[in-house]
Amino acid sequence: AILAQTERSSNPIPTSVLMGAMLGSLARSVYAVGLLGNMLWTTALMNVVHLAPMSKAWKEGVCLVLTQLAWRIALLFAPWMSVQGDDDYAEQWGLVLSLMDEYDSEDVREGKPRRPLFVLANHTSFFDTVLGVAKLPVQVLWRCRTYMAGHLFSFPILSTIGKSVGHFPVYFASDEDGVFKVDAKKMEPVEKRVDNHLQGGGWLCFFPEGQVNKSPEKIMPFRFGGMRKALEYDARIVQLVFRGNEQVWPRKCQVGGFPGKVRYSMRPIALDGARAFVQIARAEGAKEEVDMPDHAILAKRAQQLMQEQYDALAEDKQGALSKLHGKLQKDNKKD
Image 1 (cartoon, rainbow, N blue to C red):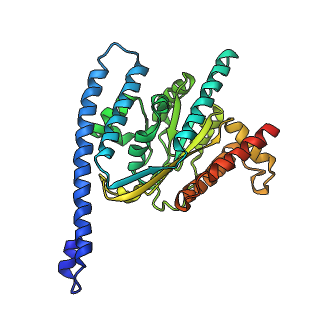
Image 2: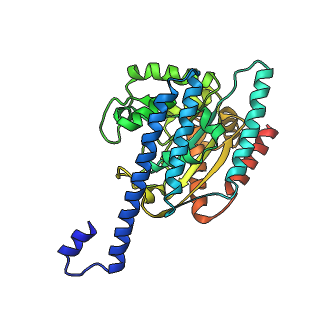
Image 3: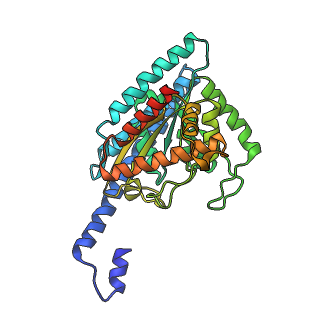
């Protein structure tokens, strides 16, 4: 496009810009080849895994780890994509996993169903999925499943991955851009699968905005379906936030790999559960929330926290949301 513009324009584009565009295209091509190659051997191994004498859960877990390995290798050989997590990223996950182990043991001792962990992430690019899978701890990835648009299950490689790891298709009633009403009849058996997964000790990871955000700087309102599910299971909630993914993999591009800098962080926002989170929010007595249902309050507050987390990545305010989470936890103990 830049070369074509140069030919049409009387003012030639600087050589440095042309060289940058060429290097960017070369970088993208190298990443695309590496990503495709890794996904091909991964899907081939997945077919072998599903022939092995293992439980369905184990087969799906192994396939998830294979996917993570493939996408980590692709990133390793694309150093021009600078991917950097918060300094306390591993520490935050260590805290969450330690607490989840304690909570699970306590629930088992008391004969209660284990409450799931929900991982909410912002959505600006397909790279959100690639980077999220690559950077999640294996213990989290193993138990997590997500929703995928139903049409993605018709793509040769993605369909193999989606089916092999046990992800859930979402069937929309319309193909119109921006219309997200689901086909209720088709979704009934899917939601039963989701419930079976959660009741069996599984966790859920999804994009609460419900679509790719065209304006990444502003987190979109969260859709209520996921919030209702979180309250139904009193899920413990963390948020995984990315900044810069749309630069290395633009929203409308079939494949990414452009040079750029990406940052990401994870913050727990409701480790005591979604219901306790809403209870604390209601105790603050915000007038605009008095008549709001619980799922709307959860959606509003979680969106606000995700926005703060996103902004903190730009401002290099390490630990800002950790302090906020600490305040929420302290208030919850008081209640």
